[in-house]
Length: 311
Image 1: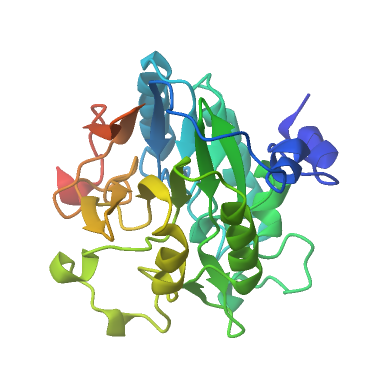
Image 2: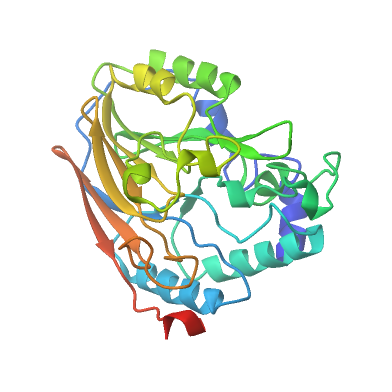
């Protein structure tokens, strides 16, 4: 079955994420239990493109990931570079390239939507907002719903959609009102102490602006963290959140707020396939979960940039 024909089959349903995953999130979970020990991979910001040896780099990373003893992969978003500012032909080409390359991992993959995974957002792309593929429909066609939950060995994983497409055809970091209502309802039926792990592309909490080259004024909208972080933390804080895993900034970072570790997972693409970004090299994260919480190992995989600026 070709990638194109597979997408056509999935387009009428919940995509790669089985519909039962989404539907079952509204059911009352079983009683809280101490999680079994297990490991998973957090792989984010692959930014796959034909240029800059990105496919070679992704293959190297995915083959290293395939050798890890991990139960599954949590993909943190920005699968491709870039669907926001290109034609549908280019967007489909890089998505085909990503889906083909991702098969190297050989593990179950749960996907988080990133801003670069939204088609035609910028008016300069030439896309119409009425295009059936516009915005997150492009992501849904390939990967399924943009927010959902699943349970693995006693831990509830909640995958959030932190990308809000604005009326002026830009984006900001935000968990929208419909999703907040869904999250509130999901959390309300959890037994006390249920262990949770959250995934979001745009960080809820980050110290990025304290050491990055950019300042908030460099963006039209709040783009490097979510606008309504406090609202989400107020929902999460009463619960047993083991960690929040984040992407987007391409840095390796751990910030503790309200007793919750907010862990930003670096980037497979490093500095967008042009070397190390703010001290973080190309890599992926191995996450170990047990009754004491989470422990992370960030691993590089040997990619060397071929960009002349980095030789």
